[in-house]
Length: 321
Image 1 (cartoon, rainbow, N blue to C red):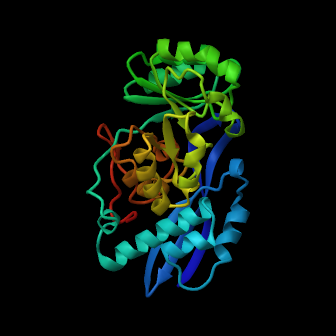
Image 2: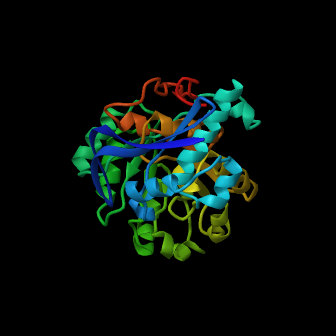
């Protein structure tokens, strides 16, 4: 079994800003696993918030040897980007070997398109209103917030897209006091979900706090081991494959979270269609699907995912799975 890691850069369609900073390109790692003349592939996005870099994740992957299995990965690597790319590549490898789609191998129903959020970058209220107006035809908009001056931005987006469903991502940028002050306004403006309002290390403040809008755990939820710490704080969990460490754990987390009464959101880092492809399987029937990474790019993989009025479509076998 041969493992190859390459770095790929995809230009963004425009500057993308969140409360932590701005970027103009998506830097990803592409992992190919070849065995018996068959190659499966996967993509991951190392994330500085979780102390990952392109170099550190590459080293994790290149430090492995021998024949790998998805089950063995869970003893070899922690949840994170490295395990994600390898896990997804091994799923793709098995699908190509057997001539069956990944959802068949996993015992899942055939996937269907899912409506996905489209993310508006953090900017001035005027610029965000213009963004919202440009994308007002989309049924679901996600707003990046997380600053002390978010109300004018939220009001501006609602003016720009009066009919769209809106979800808000604070990216850990609010304090408990700021969130408590904003919560009634979120209701007034028809916000359907607020994602990670407080820093993950300070979210105990959510216990006992009124949650008139469902609150989703993102940075506070990585894999099944995260669930016990979410009780009483969150209503929804955001499943991202780069956090769970692959499709295998993402599917397991989805089932465990549902069993404990959580709503499901399926999200992404900014990556190509290859990164989104396995997440489409996890997103089936989710409360919120947020797999718009390719829509934010100026360029994508060949055989890219199809996005249309029905949503993001399952991958074709030429891409993955």
